[in-house]
Image 1: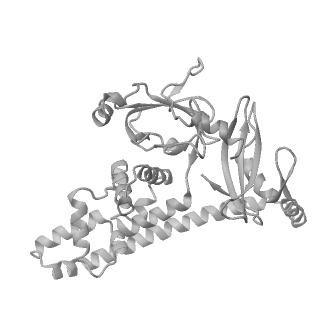
Image 2: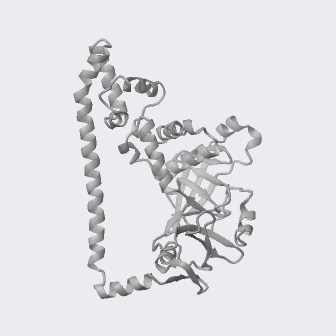
Image 3: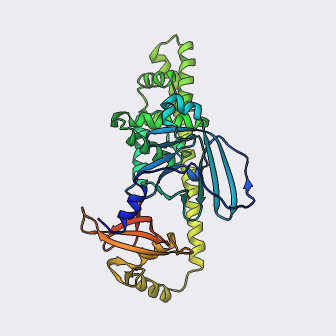
Amino acid sequence: MNPFKRPLFKLIASLSLVMSLSLPSIVLAQETPSNQASNDIVGVWQASTQGPAFVVTKQSIYLNKQFYQLKQVEKNSAVPNIDTYTLHFDTAKFVKDYGQAALENELPFTWQYNQTMDTLTGNFTYYRQIDLNTVTSQKEELLKTQPINAEHLSTVLKNSISGYSEIARQEDIPQAKVNRFIYDQIVKEYPDLGLLKGDEYGEYLKISRQLPDFKWEDLNKANPADVLSWYREAAKVNKNDKKKIAAALKNKIQAAIKEFDQRMSQAEKEGLKTTSTDSSSQDASNQDETSKDETNAQKDQPAVDSNGKKIEGVKAEAVDAIKKTYPTMAGSNITYIVTTDQDDKNVIVVEVYAKGDAQLNLMGIFHYLKDAKTIQQIQ
């Protein structure tokens, strides 16, 4: 075991999440309280890659297999890039769900969110955990199995999907039921999407089989709630004759699908245009070709850790990217611990720690092929 991991892991092995936090005596700029968590703090959080994780969703905190339903969330800003969140939960509901003995105290959860570092700080510092590949795969599964489309999912936070997936994992929900579980969480926490729930969910599944001209994912593009409404109206006019209903809806559904594709295409073009504009602005300020070649040559040099030792097989460009992500902080500095992945010897693993006065704080873990110049973060 890495000697730098053991003290930190022991420190957090018994996770006691911050129900209180001592703050300096300063005047805080307070926003209007809400009954939902801010998007900034939604997601999966962990004090180390080995410690237990907890989840903040829009409406609850999931900790130790228990849900704390949020009742009021207060946001206070004292210094630039630092927000203090106080999350009050519904103690009556908690006691009803888990019993009085499970309620250790009624104090709210209080954390400081660092916008620059993307961390939560209370008794410990917690780091966001998200695997974007897993989130993408989960979205694809939702599109294949649930009455939801890509336009709906474009408004759902990636960190929400990550959080729901983590809850499903900790709850040991069978794989066959995970997609429905995550869909139900989206329905609950994103009511403005108008997704189907309850009996309407089952009714839509039934009528989707009675519209053979459309594949499942195409039908969902027309918006399941609209399709269900149109089907009900057509059923009344055509006295529940399935063939006549399908014929009556065909053109309307095709038009809705076409409009959907046009909206998504336009959104994609706007995204590419933004990327192109950013790239052009950057190119305008770049140095000449000779200078670029020199810079690239420097990037091809072996990386050097915080102690000046060369990191074999790791390009300087990769570690430079890590340094930009985790800059040296006041009162501490960054150290790198480099190892070879146990399962794949061609993969380098770099653990980044901030050296404090009394302990090492794990900031992030990165991995990439030995010959690669870029990094991919494991969160």
